[in-house]
Image (cartoon, rainbow, N blue to C red; front, side):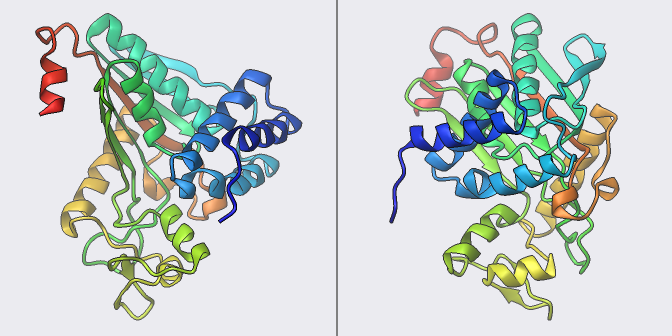
Length: 285
């Protein structure tokens, strides 16, 4: 296997983004988020996603220098407009603002509309945990998940992230509502591998471990069957309602036109609520 140093990857990504008109600091952050995902083994949402990111910039779907703007504030809850900016930069700023609100109120919530794919959602969980707060965030997606018992993709696989800070290593959950995210399906397909367990249905409606067959049918398997299907629906509803943005059924169904997503970032500062060392002891047990 060819191994490329992280710093080399980061440098190449940075130079590409600068050529596309990114401001230096924004290019550096976007490049770092991509490079870290692949460094950490999440190739499906790291370098594998970068070519599509570039194509969506070149087509004008992602607006390189657009920055999110606050629309309304309700104390510890704020509504922001992502202005179709780069999804990973918008998400990073959304979580940063939620963290700042949690310092003031104990809890902070930023609901973000009109944004783009955030790439690896776990990045924003680690961002929160590194700041010493509990992080919860999720996004809706285009329709790529059939509700349980249905054959047509009408729900999104709406990734959910929950992160708890811990000195010996944060506890971070990063999962889509499908058994395998579409990024993971693509990664298995590119490696020429079958899935380790059934991941969806083929065009004949049969369970399959063939990632390409699931990509073709667009019938991924919800986690927990009907439970994952229901959770996907509720995450979509909450994201759209809180942000004032689009729900899954309103998002363009083509992957390279997937835009105007709705996302939620929540940070909870445990410091005011816990006795000294309680969180550390609990997470170590």
